[in-house]
Amino acid sequence: MMTVKLQVTILLALAVSLAAIVNMIRRKSLELKYALSWLFVCFALAVFAAFPRTMVATARFLGIDAPVNMIFFLGFCFSLLIIYTLTVSLSRMSIKMRRLTQIIALNEDRIKHMEQQLAQLKEEREHEEADSDRLQRPAGESDQPGI
Image (cartoon, rainbow, N blue to C red; front, side, top):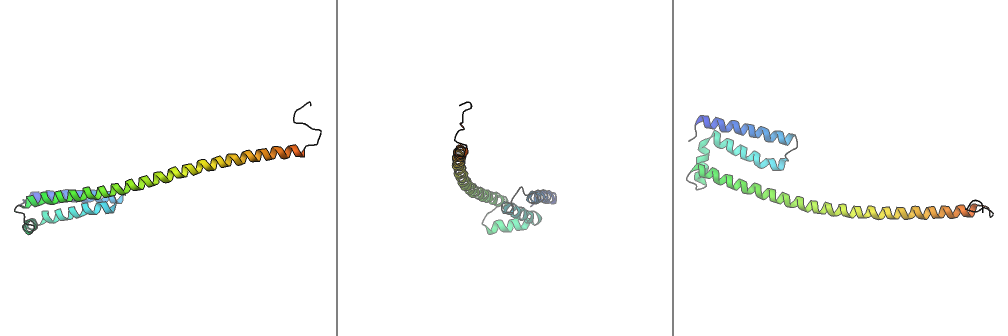
């Protein structure tokens, strides 16, 4: 069984952890969907710390002889769940990153093509203006001075 001192210590550590998680959610440095699993763990550990007999009853229900082994087993399962969740999230982010990179490359190509078209249009316009200037001059004037 747990001593009262250990129970209080665990509950205080959980309260600090809970405050840190809530603060991170509030500052938007941790998304709620990722924090929910940590909040659930804090709640479960608080129940086990406040009512140690629930830990013994849960261990017996799961067929585990020692409650400490149950804590290690559940911690291992929780770690696997977190790893799986993060792997799925990383995979989704990788797919989004690849898609965004492709979109950026296509947009850069479009911009380059439009800049080339704009340069051609400016060049054509300059030629047209030069031709119209020559047509508007009187017949005796020349482009070169003194001729």
